[in-house]
Amino acid sequence: MGSSGCKEIFLRVVEALRGEGYNVAALYTSILSEEEARELGDEVFLVKWVPNVSEVYRVADLLVIHGGENTVHAVAYSGRPAVGIPMQFEQQFNLEALFRHGVGIMVSRKYFSEDKLVKAVRAIFNNYEKYLKNARMLAERLPKPEGEKRGAKRLYEILLEE
Image (cartoon, rainbow, N blue to C red; front, side, top):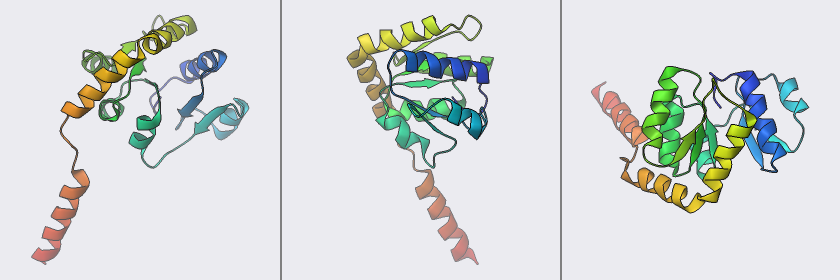
């Protein structure tokens, strides 16, 4: 749930999903200390950093995110449904744009409760094929990122100039 998250909500999300029997894997960046992460127990898979979060998103069944710009792009390209809990207006705007494509459900931070989160997760899993299909269709419509290719080409051009 990103680096801009709220520790209290992060912990409530992890506990609510674990309490429902879901396998929870979470990236905790700077939200928790390593000691706090260990205290959550072995049944929750927590990591502070991953080299390519997009690869992780593609193997998850469902993502719970805040809606930062980079995260929303990664989710859109992942072809996976999501539940979004925006922490600020920009994130709400990003999530609204993403969820207009039928790929997820937003849960209000102001009125957040574990029950509302679990209801959103269940709603997606109860209609999983629909949400997954919408997410995959969105991912297929997006332009293919070629940043590495363009970067390598530009480096090559710079080297030739010298």
